[in-house]
Image (cartoon, one colour):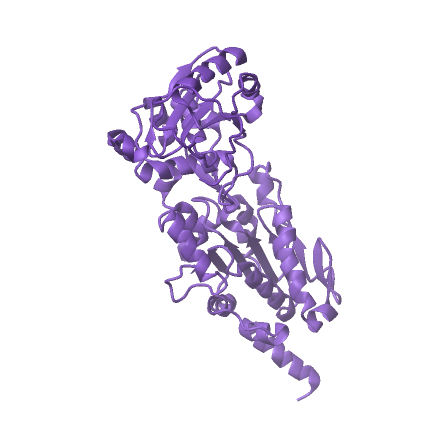
Length: 474
């Protein structure tokens, strides 16, 4: 057999056995689930990978693209992701990494930030980087993968959990006129709509799909997800927590989980009754939401440990009046910490005036960075902690405004982080600003420490503390 015929035989083998291609060209052995995807590729036009966090799905996409480029005549490929930055930092970087490990790929292909092309036929054989604007219309989105015409075509959509369905339209149409075509997508199941959900649920009959889990108790789990990390997340947040479902188990959250908390759970918190010894050891905290507009209310919500107390509501107060009102309540209830919404500067005047009164309020920006990386911002973190507090046995005063704010606030995912719908959207649904919900959520802004020698909210007269540190260990 001549050297040329040997090379041809090897290419035919790699075409039918992508796993062998990966082992021969890159010198690595795929994980079991990766081998399943590679084996399925030659036999299916559409492949979808629904994955937990970090199993190596982008690596498989890169392997499949390189396999297609090497083993098909004059192939044309297009790759996209949820954003230009994501494509550059993930899939495109992964393609470069594996090319760097293969003398064959380095000899045959030229790499740039926009295109990877075959040196023999750069205009006829390439992988093109495509992206779409976050503000793109459906028509503009549908053009993302347009313009490829060849007998052998492949499309790869990375992080497809949040990619709109319109992006897939042109790719689907291209399959009708080629000799061989493939659409490969992979992502975290963050959205109950979009390309990944459509492939795995709505149009499951058209797609070969695989679920990749990091569940420490599943024998088919991805070995790249650390078992101790997975068990830690499950222990901290529970197996039914939406973040755990998406990032550990690789499962779509149930539709019911789109709502932060249900009315039955809030009603149960109304019915709970605790005695003073049950919570007197805990810090006394207050959350204050300052009115943004004339029809909004400024609300102070007190809480001590597992017991929340009736909120206090003011309207039409300026910063001097508001600070005076809070200071009087502070004296009466002897708070250990008072957290004030400082988003957009609405609470800045109240905070400044309270400091002039020798108080130590803590400003909290709802859009600021959270302590827990599961959340997109501080607002989402506080609201989810408030919901978990209720589910964990917290007692609430009966408050219809709080009920409405909590049960009508929904969440989505931004990447792999939890994000609440905007406050104005909640206001549009319930007919008024969710000020009670914001004030209550603020009581979870930071850990607070109880001062020695004090007891229940309202049990001792005012005592000023100017050296309070909200970040001190409780």
